[in-house]
Image 1 (tube, rainbow, N blue to C red):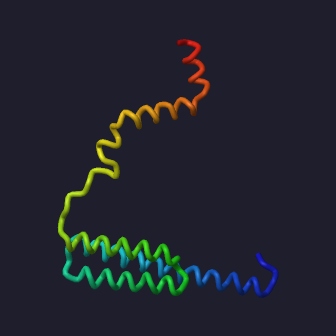
Image 2 (image 1 turned 120 degrees about the horizontal axis):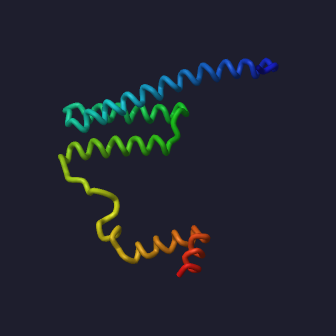
Image 3 (image 1 turned 120 degrees about the vertical axis):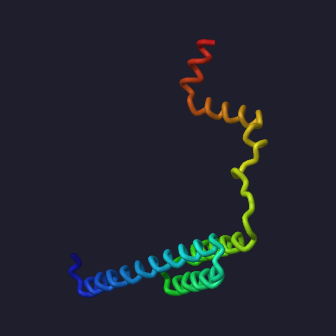
Length: 130
């Protein structure tokens, strides 16, 4: 516990501010969740809900609750969901890499050599056996 009067007051303020920020973050999560659900389901008011959520995100940045880059990331994610919903269903690729990249013999050879360099004792045991 602090002995200094100003620090005691600061601690009280911190508790109040923390509770207020927690409420704002909770509301943000709720609005984002509702907007994403509406966009994915193709609701007619999805555009309005996404705009409202983006507005709340901007307000949180102004209040100092969210970092501006975090806000930009979340707003882009919302816009992406809305655009995908308006474009219609489209088949998504199975993964980030193509089938050619994962089955390349050159990559497999490189991966094997890298694993040997990480385990020197096993490598030397195999040399002495062979």
